[in-house]
Length: 565
Image (cartoon, rainbow, N blue to C red):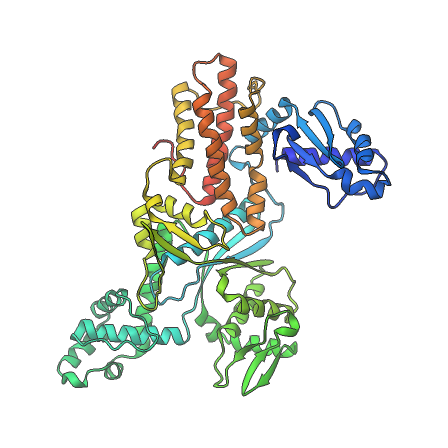
């Protein structure tokens, strides 16, 4: 991994500390980019945090540290306030980092681990009871970008989708589908069960089922001969095994989910069915494992998880009084299976409204003796669609939602992906349709991609396709705007790491937008073609570095990298 300017400064300060005869690192040493140019490029608190160990006042310690910093890296170093050290980098130091960026190319910002850590990121995992909505789209993009961020850090990542294709919600889907079959096939007013699914999409599923399934088609023909008052869901189930309708409905919905995700550029490595856990007896085995660790107790005919005494918010039911497992019980079995598959770390991308269940899962993992860092949750808030001055909330069960596929078809993959990660996951996302539709510099997606295409255009006009990073003379790059651009490029690997480990993909989206905000004025104010050869080649090298970072950033975000717009 290329050493950043920040890491270089931290290393030189640490060397200076050790030259004074002190051993070991200072854990709380900070090296931060200075917020104001008069305070230098970087500022460090090393003298403040090291004063006690050195038995000196902070400013006195700083006065001993500064002379020990090597020449040829800093134009000057100042001691400020109670003992902060402000460091001003030489232009040559900053320019050297651009050379490293050019050498890194497509790999700049990426880490190669000799023995990659195996991690699994589970996301979306929507019940196969209806089409994906824009709400699911946020989780899909968050999870996919998070996976790409971890891959950039050298982890071996498995993207997994978990289908809840068992339980009460599937029974309701089956009954709701049956009602739509009666409606489409026989013209009967549907009697959707309480808490059933009312969406129009079930009409299409019912119609396709009648056309494709001979058993259902024959049942409709037989029932047409009967009296209208005798036609009901119960009567339909006498002709057709409900499992047939369940299979038809879930398979069609799963197929549409996969198609919608593919349109969004989200591809999963594994599709995991909840039903397999039941069929293989893993739910019962998980309960026995919990009992063996004294992690459960009985009360009111139910079996409860001892969550509170293991760090959970409150104890939760695992097996209901009727003997049926809860979602939590099945989820514990699922995570035991994840551990069995040798994942060293698993991250579940979920809505922030499931915090009690999430704390119970963490408690269950502790009971089973799994490492504390085995399971993490990346949480997010919900999505509303804003058009004009109004915002709409959605409900899949009631059939009030905007299908994800409609949004992608109207706006395109790039726009949807960027807008879905542009806000902090823990914040509510108001998806502004008017802004997303705009093909102008107001639209952040257009603004970022246009920066990349502008650079491509300059290279085409210059008749240059490549920059030799080892030979190009970078000394003409001395303007503040040019050095600031290089320093901003230098931060890219740090942003990648922070966005991944902090479950914060929005940091990468922010970084790309801010880089574009710095680049576009530079493009306007600084001429490249037509300057003398040395200046032109140096500026072309800078633009290649900017373009490299834009490309690497957009690729992690899962967006296209256009050469022209």
